[in-house]
Image 1 (cartoon, rainbow, N blue to C red):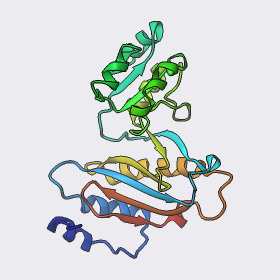
Image 2 (image 1 turned 45 degrees about the vertical axis):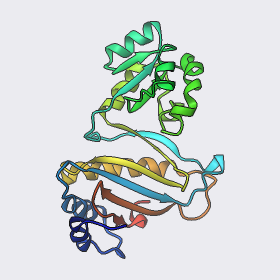
Image 3 (image 1 turned 90 degrees about the vertical axis):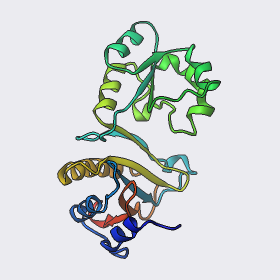
Length: 230
């Protein structure tokens, strides 16, 4: 893959063979985020898990102390009093059965997180083929299937992010924007890593954190020493 001059210049500042401390890694990521827009800073965690086994899955959610810097649009599936509660809590979209054709047939996906009350999961389940592959399916472990819709919305808007293994057993999570201060990114990173370390599956044998890399949207990856995190 051919990289642009900015990327190549940024990559020269980073030793690809080195494992950096968190502070130094975050400082380098900020320095190498040179795009004309406010780049997202992401963490990529390669684990020793085998996601094909149910007892080695990792999935959960954590509220980042400084949020992600992104405005998150929340869709809530609820009815009656719970729908009113969702509206009052600041949900961007609230509905039920009537949203199914809009999502299935019209391809409407102008939302980032889906929350549902347990009694609506029969309806939401019909959207599994659309929402599932996009990682939008509500899930009790992530706190998005709940009767306390107001708390769920509040947490999501405050910076709650979901983490889960992808098919290659890697977790990809945003921890803020390049415009964040180093301290803000460090707080968010440490909060995320605490949650990931706690989520280590009991069934896993051997090394859990194989590699931890921090990168901005357009910048090169900086490897953090996983031995200093666990």
